[in-house]
Image (cartoon, rainbow, N blue to C red; front, side, top):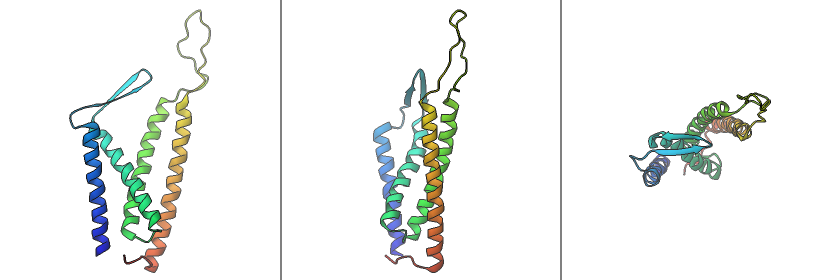
Length: 161
């Protein structure tokens, strides 16, 4: 039962730290403005809170699971949950980045006397492949930890501390 209380304190402590730091960084009534090239994205602060919440919990429990050598069942399940949410977050991010990629070789409204304008791509394509690599790594990690947790749970080899 002490492990349950320990995980409850870790979960609540991380939640409180995230909410307090979010309040001091972004405030409650102010909008967040992101400028990418000539486009401004105005985002409500609570829209940023969910990805921030998922990301911080992912990293906190990633460290806890690896330091504990996969021996804490509750931490493993919490990490598996936030890893799945991170994979979903990366999926939405990949959809957004893919919508920003310009296709190489396309013609974009050339002037009448200016000839053909060829677009050679941009950095969004590199960022897309980087995000795709991270998402595949997260899926492999999810599978590995799920198998490892299932094997230890089946044989009851979780530590009592």
